[in-house]
Image (cartoon, rainbow, N blue to C red; front, side, top):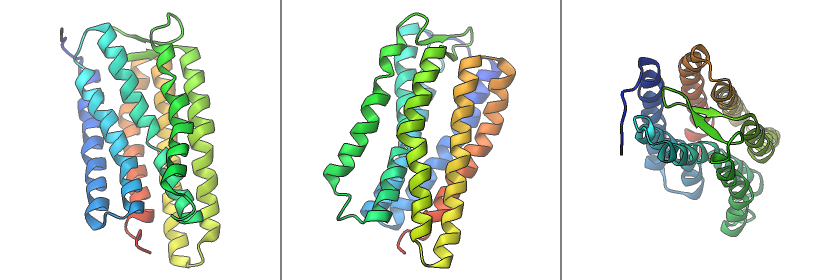
Length: 239
């Protein structure tokens, strides 16, 4: 396996910005699970842990030069990061319908309905002109077909359902305190989605200044979004 020296920009993006995000999200997952191990806590923590796994894969492949290994690991990093929000959808559905309605088999079905199309993005990875290539710094460059496919899958399978069910949950809350807290959850989700689409665009355009800007702005959005989700429900999950 061959390794190469990372540029300052690439090192900052991967091990600086993403390293801080990794530690912060792992801490929030620990806080949620440390409070209780009930199903709601576990599902919410899985959102953070899925992103953490994706970031960890990023750390592994960043200095690797082998094109095939990088493409495969980049796929898994993308998969775990973009897969994470399905746990927010399940979390919202349980709040709306109760755990008795959203049983484990139904939860698994929801995961598969989103996970299978998302996993199918691997079909694009090695197709010339349709998948992912690497620039001279080893950063992934997305083709336009790959960009369109991922935007459609993520938007239809995760973004729209998450926002829709979040609004439905807000209407259901009768307690004014919980309703106000839930607004922070919605704001946090929106911040993370803005960050996500920003990554989509920067990986497709492959403009150094855009990647650097997203490294800084994305860190702010991701940390703020992750904390607001935790603040909105994590602290009052028992209620």
